[in-house]
Length: 418
Image (cartoon, rainbow, N blue to C red; front, side, top):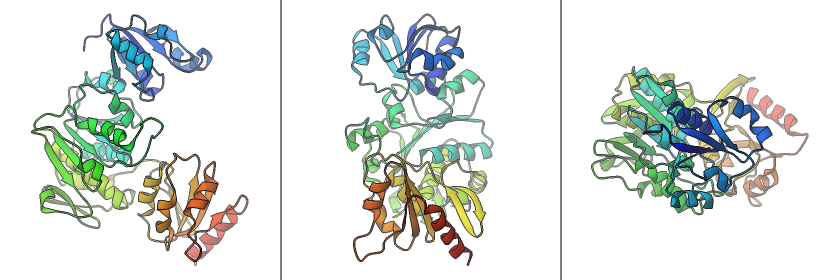
């Protein structure tokens, strides 16, 4: 991509916007930036961009930010449907996302991962499997490190593993994934996507530019994923961990903690991969890593040594016989459901904060015999308590009120110790 002399504007100065700005400047673009924040709030960020930014447009988007600009690079949080962006396109400007920009400079194969839940774990696990197999790998995208940073660091790598959100996939044009997966599609980001169908369509874009010889791994246990289209000549690797079928012999789960891919068998022994949902994540990761050239036994070694990610079923410590788990990245009902399913009994669940509009009632069946106490906190606490309580006569989880949560936890700990 030729950038020298192009008049570019980066919209949104979060991590990915800052990385995009540096990438554009490094390739000779004449750079402007725009952000909703005030100039005073942007000052710490602009200090790190001093000398490369020619214009700053703070305090919200305006027509002036796009005037005479032939390239607009969006941060993921900026909807591409904004009227000002439509006007920029009408004037001939190219409007792309940060991952699209970065992908045009990446030569090694890209493994792309998306889904409502599990994409960060699958991204980190895929990168870990490839690394244990001796590959040099960059892992990033929606997971921590902006894809533009891969380009800025330079050097030759064997693979890039990229977590892609629906927001990022809306901004792609030519990004090609040599191996890609969609893990699941459940209600999320309803403030951005007008319907679940449009949300699924954004996820499906991960397969948009695949070519013959590439691989697409689809969890067909999810009907929306099963309905997604892949391009002719792309190896469509369907898997359903619940009901293996002969048509899915390329990738299926053959036992509670045993996976089978292309005739090779793998055991899930790491505590960081507990639960049926992590069996799905591991299947996808193995398919992607295998397509890029990794082989057993290095893959099994990678599964055994996977360290996990912070805040995702993360073991914190065991104290007086009670295991403490940090799963604070479970930020929607479906992810909480998957995490709870990884445990059989004796759970004290702390849940709350600001919800995303999805009902909590689907969690109710999981409480019976599994959850000893439910401590509700934050803005959605009353709603969680109301919707998760069993009908009269049924099993009912215990809800902590302000001030008695610590005593309740102490009682549960004493019971566990006995």
